[in-house]
Length: 148
Image (cartoon, rainbow, N blue to C red):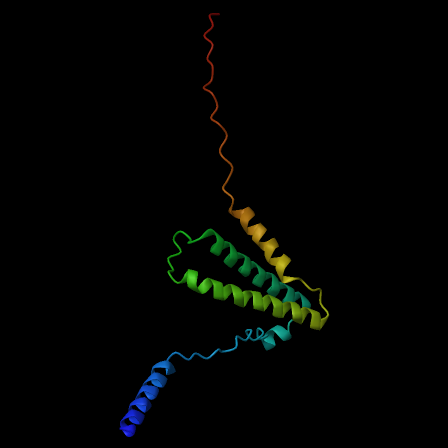
């Protein structure tokens, strides 16, 4: 009798252990993304070249931010844009940080990423404003009929 009770408790214990085994989760530590890899081409550029590359990356980041804020672009036609654009924006921000660090390392004039993106976004928003409304139409000319 005891052996049956022992076998029954063993099966009960093992079934509970197996049913709970799927409930165990492992917490994976969240690591920050690795720093943006500066290419050898970037490292060999002059200060002017780094500044131009920085301005281009700031302009691209500003465009991505603006497009994400405005919403879907008419005629853009890409369904994956809302999914891919945030990742591209993160990459552009990381590139800006890497280029700013490279400017510091080389002793160049350092441009800060945040203000540079804001400046480019203001330029973009200023260029996208709708044109001013046309002036009101002129009244029809007055014709004087004179005898003389």
